[in-house]
Image 1 (spheres, rainbow, N blue to C red):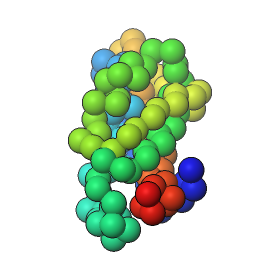
Image 2 (cartoon, rainbow, N blue to C red):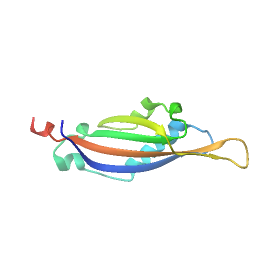
Image 3 (spheres, helix red, strand yellow):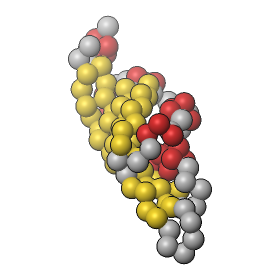
Length: 117
């Protein structure tokens, strides 16, 4: 495989009241994806399903993230998700609890050798 990176996007998502790390992570992915209208698959002559999508999510409680829920965010392509410690938990000062901030890096690549098969 000759994997070639063609796009890197970043996003941020929050869960203000519910401390839902999965939802904050999903919002971070959507933030990265929805700010763009990329036609890279067409530009390289690949179907959209050929996109290799590597996602890294940073949250303070990686074990609390449902990766299958995040995979369902992608309408096409071949996503893989890795969750690491990062992001922020911000204590609420007006009442108990905290707000959760997740950060996402979404990298789109193609197997350039597959085009020649």
